[in-house]
Length: 102
Image (spheres, rainbow, N blue to C red):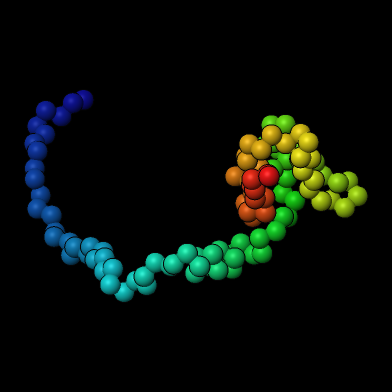
């Protein structure tokens, strides 16, 4: 059964203490220069060498990147590679560099 004698009643709320995060940028260290950033990335990413994650092999549109079954090394066949640079772009370690062929 519907209660028709409802009334809206506004109750006072207790005021809460407002605790806002106050940002102070004075205590932060200045940004790293380019050499410091490279050194820091080496610390985080380990040495910049191929770990055979196969990302380059998976994204190569020409299937120019294969793996040597005996040694496990990644091999790039430059006769088939068109130089699109996708492999270098996706390499998480930066082990592939695109260099202008002369």
